[in-house]
Amino acid sequence: MSVLTAAQNLVQLGADAIIAGGTVPQAYITGTVGEETMVPVVSLAPYYYFLGTYLVQMSFAETAFVRCITDIVKSYNWRRVITIYEDDVFGSVSSTAFLLSNALDVIGSEIEYRAIFPPADSMSDPRGTLREELKIAKSQLSTVYIILRISETLTRILFEEAVSQGLMGKGYIWICGNDITTLLDTSFTPSYISKYMQGLVGIRSYINETAPEYLNFQSTFQQRFKTKYEKSGESSFDPGVYAVRAYDVVDVISLAAAASEKNNKSLVENLIASNFSGLSGFVRPTNGSLDEHERYSTFCIINVVGRSYREMGIWVDGIGFYENEEQMLRQVSSEKLESVVVWPGGPLNTPAGLRRLKVGVPATNTTWDNFVAVETNGSINSSSGFCIDVFTATLSCLSYDVLYDFVSFKIDYYDDLVNKVYSGEVDIAVGDITILENRSELVSFTKPYLSSGLAMLVPVEVDRKGWLPTKAFSLKLWTCILALLLYYIMLVWFHELIGEDNAEFAVIMQRL
Image: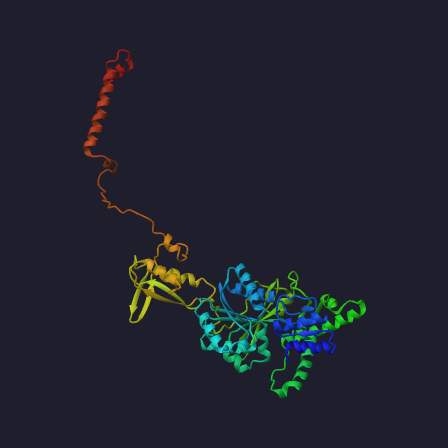
């Protein structure tokens, strides 16, 4: 039965309201029936705006999900990310990707590559399509993979192909949202999780699972779900995030219906006016975009370890991260996610979010071996020198690990090494490379850490004998100076001696 037929049948049966889950196209089709029949349609589809008087949104805000991802990226200072998503005919997920791109731009990061897939049922070879897209993504510099939205069918294929291509190993980061974290509790077996999803970081809507109201609901749900579906092969009976949200929607509709009997307003008007705090958090229906000035979204950050997952923090929109519920009650928040994460491949150190870098170094034509020296021992090249020391010391100051390999090149001119960076043959070049205007047009240079400048060297003869001031002039010149001095002394003396009015000088001469 099609979605359109099902919605029409519900209206004919006298439904006062319809709850539309699933995808955006399904919600849109159901919404058109609601508009034609003036029956409110409450949508749980993850989309950040809807149009229509009778199409009411009660899903989790995509804008909050985008802000949560952005804060996680900012926590680890990842500069490049790769997005993966399965889009629909409305381009709803592309809109979310656009929001994420703008948010990342604010913190100085960017989406390096977008792996976009059409709906799974429209692809003739889903596995082959995903395999080729992952090969392209693997060639990019970033190793941060963010799954915005994807169906269960493609999720299984995605992680199987990611493992086969080595994308779930050391140095890689995978982040996902509600659509996948819900499957951890409902569809994926522990053996599948252990084999294909290790180190995954998930973002799921926060639910206080210790509240008495939730525990009562969980017990009732498990009993009824097990009774009805256990014989059909179902093995997981815990309610997911969307089941809890749907339960809250039923409560909101019943409250709005009761209000309609008292105030003579329509059901959709009372739905829009509702302010309800349910098991899934604060619920505020709207038939437009979710209010941006009132941020109620809270997400739980989980980390897949072993055959299941563990909770490692809570994110509150507009506030930041909490390590646990106790800190949230004491309002001790942080701008960074400070919990220890077990990343893919097992390392506890935070990956740099970059694939293993190829670092080019000059093997010949170095100005001075103390800057860069490449030694060959069989087939292994080792690099050393002042420039190499500066490079490794800089990496040691970072808060994350950067994996790299030195690649040596025999070059005639340093322009050749610069061109290798420009062409993508290597990611970085390290060496005594002078910053020139023509080179700066091709690559970006670090700030100078050494300046050669210009200097002149002249030989100096050291002679410690004699009186240093006499070395200023030659012997002949000193003789001329002394002769002139004696001449002027005699001339003055003679002039004073013959003077008629100089009696004092005459007395002095008589005494001499």
